[in-house]
Image 1 (tube, rainbow, N blue to C red):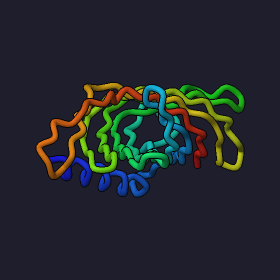
Image 2: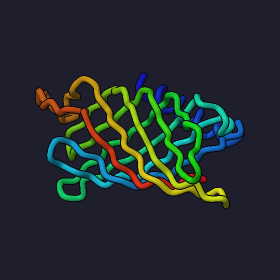
Image 3: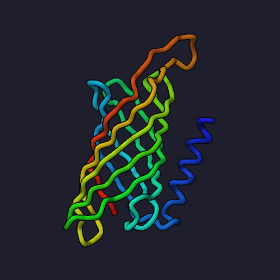
Image 4: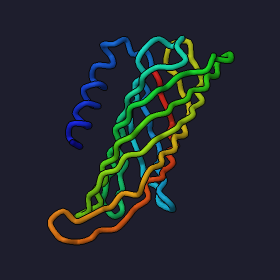
Length: 169
């Protein structure tokens, strides 16, 4: 079932440019878990014209722990939109569901979360915008287990905050 979700989200993300995606965001930022911060890179695609306040949105991101070795993969689907622009500033929002895949060395786990986000960008005439984005994810704790043993594993909170620098074209 997990593989089917990932495949569906990847397929939809691949179709988004063909469906006249007008907002493609490259996000470089930091994902915070309790007291830990991991660097993260991601992409988000909102489908449809900018004039719409509500558009379907798809995204993918990966966060890395370079100290202990680990990754968190995130695939998301939801709704996004922009409030009317004020001069050169634009405020954006997003709500949806995220599917997370955790890999901490020998420990693995999956989880589902809901997310909400707000962003502020400087709109440039040449179509390349710059800004910041704040995303909060929340859901049930994930149980991380060693794959090849009867280890009961441990619980990890999936409540995270992601602050990103955004380039939109």
